[in-house]
Image 1: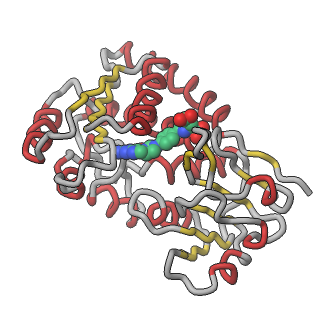
Image 2 (image 1 turned 30 degrees about the vertical axis):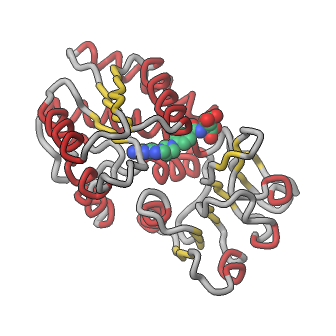
Length: 289
Ligand SMILES: Nc1nc(=O)c2c([nH]1)NC[C@@H]1CN(c3ccc(C(=O)N[C@@H](CCC(=O)O)C(=O)O)cc3)C=[N+]21
């Protein structure tokens, strides 16, 4: 059997078309969703992601700007900027591109962003609300994954989902969202003993290990749904995932490619969250539902 390939690029495009209409309607009410991205330093990969975000937002008529700051920016300067953006009524969503330079405490920065503008879903308030199943900004990559599964009518309830990776931005929240969707969730990580023992039981396998082609077909159960969150650059500049796509696709029922898989969905969810933030500003409340 050869797996069906879940094309995140096309799905993201379709979702953006719907968002464009939604934005047009909001414009009728005098609201233009506005995303501000802060990028510190000039890491080429970060720049490329930030450009992707800017392009995607302008395509759907969203206002977006990128604030580029030098590597030497102090923590205080960044926190002051965030404070200014928190109070700027024109700005609905704030994203500070990670990773940050070592002299800046990442968690401090994340916690400085108003939870109502935290379109990354990284603030502890949003994480806590996600964990308790309340209305929250959900982190974009995990939300993109759940959206891909749902849009392809892949059942989650009752399935055994195995997540490899436990980062705050992907592994932990994707497991939580799968749990919220009634999956039975197992987390694996670098200290897991006998990884294969767990991954072979997965109906849904989410791979976020950060090592190119780390997961081959010997880790995968026949007919599993395999989601590859890896973004690795090969020496010749191409993108490749954490999954050995060519060999796993012969065993899986569904598989996401890299590129054109989870990555474009991440950006689409960022736009979705920003539209949500703009709508909530309208009522001027952080909804407590
Ligand atoms: N605060 C913050 N929020 C983030 O969401 C965030 C971040 N920091 N830091 C970096 C990572 C990485 N990330 C990606 C988003 C889209 C693609 C993407 O669209 N990739 C395309 C390929 C793009 C290309 O060719 O370079 C694809 O997979 O098809 C990749 C990576 C968001 N991140």
